Image (tube, rainbow, N blue to C red):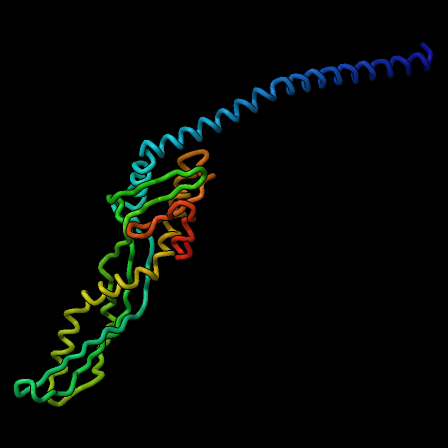
Length: 248
C-alpha cells in the first residue's frame, strides 16, 4: 500500500468520525429544542401552583396558624420578644407638708433614685394575628406592643437627697420612693414604647420574611409590612409606609 493510500484512509476515517459526532449533536440539539417548551411550561405550572397554594393558605387562615405555631415553638412560649432598651433611669419624689392647719408650709423634701433599668418589649402570640395578601405585598396586623416588668439592677441603685429640711424626715421619703420604683418603672416603660416601635417593627418584618421564605418556595417574593394594633391602617390610595410615618 502506498503512502498516499494510507493517508487517504486516515482522512476518510477522521471525516467519518466527525460526521457521526455532528449527526449525534444535531439529534440532541433538535431533541432539546422539542422538549424545551414542555420544560418551560412545566416549570411555569409549578410556580403558578406554588403561588396559588400560598395565596390559598393566606385566604384560608393557614398562614396565621402556621406562623403562630412556628413562633411559639421558636420562642419557647407565647411571647415573641421584639425589642430591648437599657438605660440609667432617675426617679424623683417630692414631698410637701404644712402645719398649723395648712397655714405654714414646710420646706419640700426632694429625694432621687438612680438605677440601671432593662426594658423588654414583646408581642403576645396568643392574641390575634392577621395576614393580608395584596399582589406581592403582605400586610401583617400584629398585636399591641407589650412589655415585661422592667428589671432594675438593685445592686447599682443609688439614692440622693436633693433637698432636705431639719423639720422633715428624709429617710421616710426615700422609703416611699423605694416602694414605688416598680410602678414608676412600668409607667416609664409605657411612655417609651415610641422609642422601640420601629425597632420592633423591623424585627417582626424580618422574622416573618425569614419564616415565609423557609415555609413557601415563593415566600421570598413578597414584601412585608407590619402594623401594630392601635396604629392607623392606610386607606385607599395611601401607602402603608407613608401612613406609618405620618405623611399620608
